[in-house]
Length: 222
Image (cartoon, rainbow, N blue to C red; front, side, top):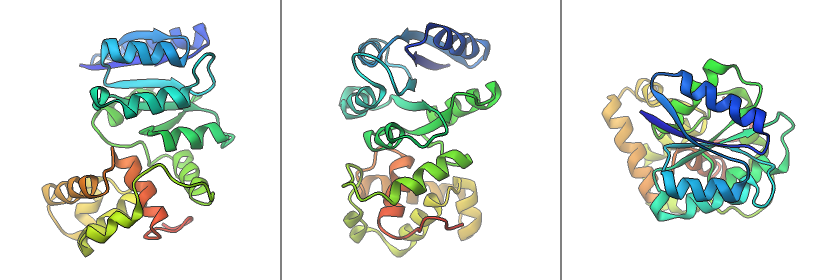
């Protein structure tokens, strides 16, 4: 059972997401938070698999709450899925830097939202949707220093691992990477695991950023 915490300052939105989560046989809502501070408190108390995190909230916003969750070693298994609008606001970029595993639009269809929770809970990053690709590409054009994995860490990566990282940056799934490189699925997963370790990356989302920031993938590449 995938345990989900819902954080949003609007009670109606929060309740709607909770009802949706509870409607799925493999998901269960373990709490609701009205702001980032409460989200952090409940994350520590409930240890959910996924936090659906709104960005603009009182007291502690979703960015700082995400940063606090991803920086806490005791919450290493908690993934944050940021709920945002399609205006490419600075808050969304900051959330990515803070360690969010992905983005989701608030007007996403219910079935897609539930699938997104499952993807993130499985340790994947939500990178395939068009909006997330656009967010990442816009993010990489910005000159701000990164708080994510240092691309210099690629010095320890093999040529094959660099190929895998480039494909991850393009949004390929493990299955697609295996097919593209003509290797087994287990081999593809092994390469990704080694990249996570060598780049000190929390999850796949950080590998994507590393792929762009290192120049292995350029904005607009396909």
